[in-house]
Length: 320
Ligand code: A3D
Image 1 (cartoon, rainbow, N blue to C red):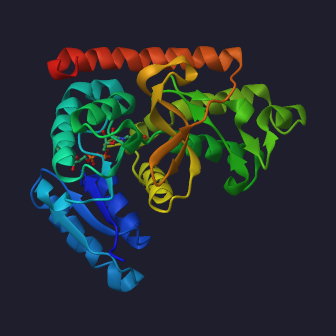
Image 2 (cartoon, rainbow, N blue to C red; image 1 turned 135 degrees about the vertical axis):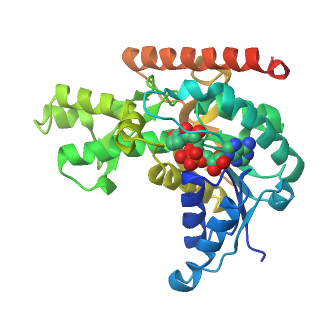
């Protein structure tokens, strides 16, 4: 059986980390694309030379030509600019929208059967625009945010309770921005909901509220520490989990920015919700019952995504 092909559009911090993980895990042969000449080729050469040491069988090539992504099974998009300290994700909109147009056209021409995972910010608007420009089915274009946001929430919860991260399961809904909604009621330690753990005296509401706030600002905290660039290890790992679920038809339940057609009362927007990812892409959107507070939080988040789409349509008339 031929090896799968993984195309990575954008060979920056996340793109390079994705290439390393994809090769190491032997997800398939890797094509690293960027508009900057030399960078994808240099990173690909460096990564190829990890092969003999790590013992992986995957070819890694770098390119500036979309034709090289032809027939890709999975395309992961990180092309664009990342945040600098003091910038919000939304500040990236104008620049990254143009990038999504060229990337979408490249995917449409060379990899129309791929499962596409968008990471470029502002995520919920960029994944929508990428889908519009590529013309792929909505079920085959998805945004990575919830897996990362939940991983951040789970990390902080594991630290708070002094337990293994493997026993923590947490939930973040909504847009990938300051309005995201970490859902405490659906977050558990080995099945025990966090509110019950508070009742058991393992933490306090105030401490959990602070963790929820820290999760929503999780990306900003790292941007401020790094001084230049934004998080890339955990974002790359999160997208790889989504790619693995698709390639292996694992049907994992993962929070992702998915296209909603009536679910959660939303129509025609990409919003972070739990979905099942398998061989057909997004195979199910899971609608969970939310209390009034979470519902209100989700609505604020949905309204923020709507505003971004209005801005996209104002910038690029072909999207209106
Ligand atoms: P960075 O290291 O700057 O890499 C971006 C790469 O994109 C650079 O190598 C650029 O040369 C390349 N590029 C620019 N324009 C194009 C183009 N038209 N076609 C192809 N390549 C192009 O950034 P990064 O890897 O750290 O981050 C990439 C994106 O992910 C940014 O928009 C971040 O804001 C975003 N991001 C999202 C999350 C989410 O959870 C959604 C997390 C972290 C970062």
